[in-house]
Amino acid sequence: MTNPNSKQGNVVVLGAAIEDLSSIVTFASSSGIPVEEVVEWVENGTIPSARFADFIMVDVGKLRADLLNGKKEFKEGDYDHD
Image (tube, rainbow, N blue to C red; front, side, top):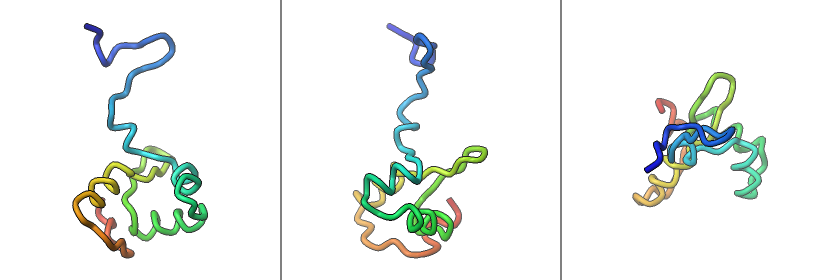
């Protein structure tokens, strides 16, 4: 069995959690929403996000989980404390 944390060529396996994040541009283009609107949603806490150094990513894992749990409305401030 291969260690899931080992280097494989030039790739370091990061695990499933990284799949739960999307760049703002990728999220916007895959959703058909203007980038500026997604930026506004992230900044005002309408959708969940995560910050890594200088990068802000949309937390699509959290968004997916909330939708599957029945969340129907996303309002400004819903994710201010995430």
